Length: 76
Figure 1: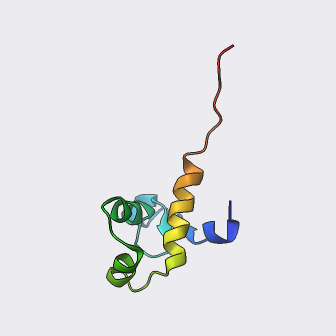
Figure 2 (figure 1 turned 90 degrees about the vertical axis):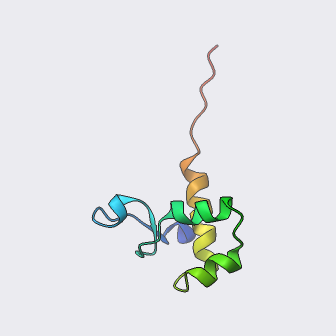
């Protein structure tokens, strides 16, 4: 887990309904993930959102990965 990269993800109660965003912009992590899952390339995303940096895309992916980590309990 890269804390410096994850620091690019911001949570502000009054912005985007409190959803995680990229560096305080009104670009949600979920927006980036949706674009990637639809097949958009990093270059296309960066062209559509000039305020983004490629590291922001990696930060969105890392944030999603961290959010899906959870302990697995196995009944004995």
